[in-house]
Image (tube, rainbow, N blue to C red; front, side, top):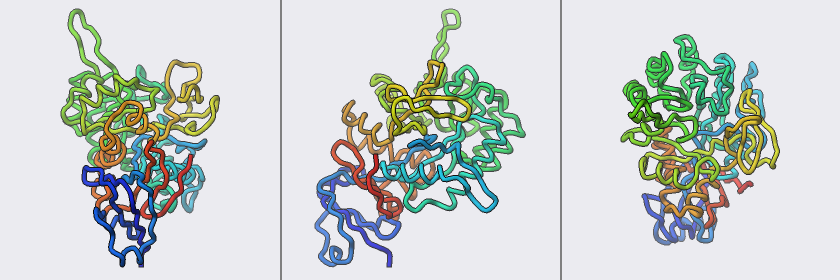
Length: 400
């Protein structure tokens, strides 16, 4: 019989409300029930009871854009003849579980197409195998190589290219979970159709696109925007005329979902508030964390071929005025929005759980404390520091 775990005396985030004194029953790998009244004696006797002491019980966090953490990178993924050969991926997934993330996409920076394809195969091997005490690997996010050189950011410009039919076919055949590309590049519309046809979420990012290019991309199947304000064109003047860029086209869209990096470094409060007002329930938070997350000041790391370092609490590209990803956990970003900016708790939790679940197409099993969903739970203290995590019912102690 599957183990039953009863989380009692919590403030439970479920059904769009914060339920004081509620209980959550986990049975094996699934959520069995959310109880708003005192549990019966028989249940107390048959389940392992964990009194959470009034803490916040929420759906496990979902990070759709992360390159690594704790000194390890998804770029290290390698495939041996008999299966995955690296130890970086399980180390990252275990670290994520310890800081409240129960599901994630592994993001890869721009590289040669054959190199990226090899890493996708290796990461898919870990996705299929799973790590019992680590976050679920939902799939791979290809951040490139079909990006605009003018918006390269922390991507090596020499690795960027327009999407040729051969390159797109090679990557689309692997059905990555997400791909970020520049919609204005030659061949981009055909690439969007090819990726969308295999179920890949196509996102606009690192791009000089204007309104017509984004509109054509949306018609072809693009439906997400990668890290607002980071790697995006904005309004320019053509004579007396104002020409909106990708940023304004994204913010004015009534259908696209979009992500922000809410580490308090990438975007000031005013820009985060603009994104919130424009996108509403279509806005999600991502960490865009790197292997520099959790590492000391001055720690150096790579994003594919680009060298970065931890500086002033964020990743910086060495020798350039550009961010090199974040060094902040997703939970700490939610805490910044909740405690630092005063955003409502339920809204903030949704930005890191139910909303990314919808973007990734896994809302039928993740992102909510609903009977039948995966037993993915994070228990937060009042300041949104993870205290316990359950991944598919497996309890993981809090990390750093």
